[in-house]
Length: 250
Ligand SMILES: [Zn+2]
Image (cartoon, rainbow, N blue to C red; front, side, top):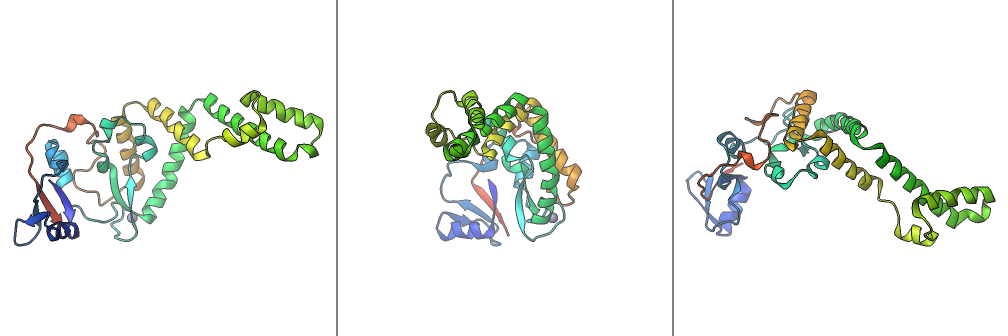
């Protein structure tokens, strides 16, 4: 059904939720029917099933280090967020152990690529709208706090900037109820444009996998991991039998 570490397997046995099937205590069988059937019950194609049920080492896939490991999302979460649900079926295929040093190195390059994609695909009107909104909100705060020190023409300039975005709303209403979304939130919307412009989620997954391979040249990837597959959709699922075995490794 799935792989887990020895600690978890022992914990299940100790709580009488499973029992060992062999003397070496590497295989357990659950004593109950789980809600989900794990990778085994999903009827995956053979190579996909083999990938998910093979024993994997807990080392950085790039340099082999065992220190300061992080979970690296090969397809960035800001992209995944806008994939249809069916494309998130095998999201763990694209989560690989990478040490903090390699992760930082890759993120420097990935961040530049993301910025480039953002500039390429986000409509300029969307960017200019949010700039105008931010400037109008700042103008409202300036007027509310410092208008008594401002010359009349400066006050008029700020008022027209505010009216252009907020109409005839009061300064108090704007400051209290219309604060622009944080920079991060506004940016997160950008990835929707980028994902839509780049097309098929399967192709986007391949794009990021290949980018990770090209930039980091990982030498310790799990067997059967490649840019090509699986495409994280229901097309790689077939009908198959299932059982409730769990193989435990250290
Ligand atoms: Zn590393």
